[in-house]
Length: 312
Image (cartoon, rainbow, N blue to C red):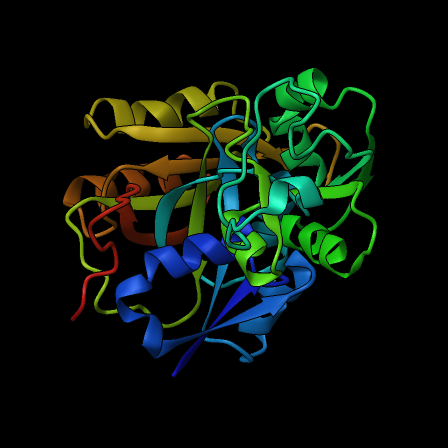
């Protein structure tokens, strides 16, 4: 059985996305939760797990800088696959006794928006990560404008803390999976400000999952420019442009070696096996640029009904 490291405790968006992605082969994997993202990277690097799942970009908040830094500076493991998954956040807690009736635990229990008898009317504290709270700001400002916010390391950790608390005025923002796992109710569902709140996840590890086959390929590069070459970035981009190679992402990040010294994180919509991409890389290296290939891998869109990780 293969082991996959995810940010824990169980029920995080990362855990939920990994289980969805591998759902047709879930019996072949053990999903191992780690408390900190550094531990997720370290687990695969040290051989405790076969792969790690890492969120690196969100449609609303952009790149997850900390995770990208770990991927580039602290880790030499290649990217083996990527997928897109919706970050659907819910307000999770315990429904008031008057609302309980016969609703099953962990199922939808959304009250009337703005009504005093809404299931979340008595909530005075919300626990979650800063990003999740920011993504639900409109709901919180409209429905719970005076609540206290408490930050934790993951959305699932917030749900776990609510589950062991006996205070019915404390709620968390998290996934439906976390609500079900910790025996809590969804007080309000899908409370994110934007419905296109998707997150990009990558699978990292030395072993290539041979069953993950897809025509759509992507290659991630780290390019560092020579300091004494004015216009070097223009030259680099031109090597892709005249070959009609599409770049889906380019982002500058500090090298952490010197103020004002940057590298460029580039996602190329092509396989490393492509003759055109190989020629482009040779030309870039001829410009005295340093090139590091982070991985060449299949990329998968979100498919809510059909299986993503097809059986071999």
